[in-house]
Length: 182
Image 1 (cartoon, rainbow, N blue to C red):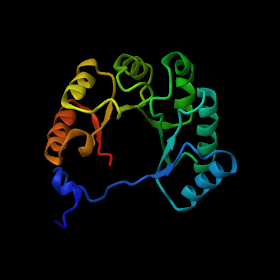
Image 2: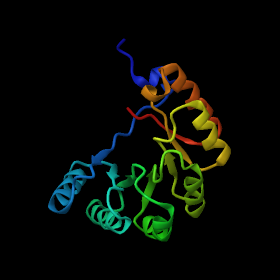
Image 3: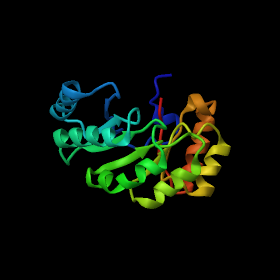
């Protein structure tokens, strides 16, 4: 139709959409350092780093390496992909804050809203629910349990652009940060 996505979801006042760089979980060692260096050189203001496939201490090492290279002026968002356990990660909250992580996406299992809520209570960093939001009922759980400060709403999961737009308004009205994943 030749329209921007923001026109469909009712956010056409926006002048700019922030697009972040991405570093996958398969990047380690020199490959991780090269990717972070490229991101810094290309001037990105946001990097999303996949973690959660190994133990939490190794994830912290990857986060520290990336932060060291990109500096403090680049926002760092980590996507855990349900890879952590609350018991393992609780002791690392302060480290995540010290690394300047701006958001932690889906740290725990998609249906473990309680752990997300406990973790959210431990920090001011927004916790984002992604895989745990497949329907309006899931959004209602997030709102009722106050277990996150952000949600990722995906039209492919929610059924249509119209439904995504409706839930976007509901999430914003509840005070949640909203993101639209693809």
